[in-house]
Length: 401
Image (cartoon, rainbow, N blue to C red; front, side, top):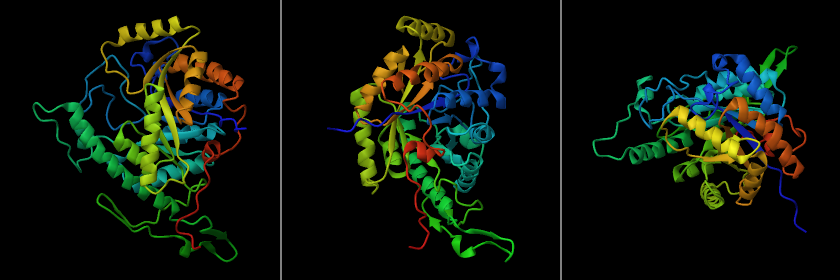
């Protein structure tokens, strides 16, 4: 008799007033509070009320834009963000179980800085930190830093193909970035701190290690200035939309987020990441693959479709979502999640179209529906993010055997 399938993992992606560009105009959206700590604390508290595994916080190094490389100059949509790592650190003491996963743009952020920032978040949250590694090929964002330049497409060159090629190169670079970050987390052994006031020994210097990483993109000696995180390694996640993303997830991630539009595409994405994982020599390691969906949830399908249509009219023309856009009831969404689980997905990251509406429909309607079907937890079973995801605490690579 086969064992029942493992319960699903669920995450929500938090961004502004929601993932629809007109979300800020909805009743209850609180646009005047978007840049306050209380707004974000309330969102994460609601997600934790629903027993979700983790929340991700979106971030970027330039104002939001629908254009792939340039500002779109829209003034009728939310523009501007707070720093994702700092938001996560602010809400960490206000929560107890949920994972906190800020987005980090690896392209222009030094791995040394991020290693200690996320290690600090892991201490602030008592072991619930992660990060979502992303890249940016936008020339305007590069100009903020002045250390590298990105060309713009030439006349007649397809912009989408140009951006895909540039992004693929940056994703390969991000693999080295994650490797440096992980080595820095390991550069202090777990028992490097002695803290013996009687003998005057605070640390054992032999248990701090140079990482001596030298590659095409980074040369980092180490060690970190921050002791090894409580989880040993914080949870690393990446959005994997194509083969370049699959390679980064397979090489470097604990969670890969994919964007299928049907079960067949989900199956293909899982196969792509598993092949990349094996090619990177990680076939025996745990690697979750979550499906991303943008969701409009209402009591009936017609209401959900009509709400989306009304918001689309307010927002004006916008590109199609990279992820599947779901309109329907929480029960309908539960059906879809369980169908796609059969394609090899172990969880889902849901993007609420309107946070003021759809987040509560996830936590107060979808979660109970999944619980009734035996597909989701009834209580938190661990107090670290690795524990919630069933990921072991990794051994330190520098500890002598």
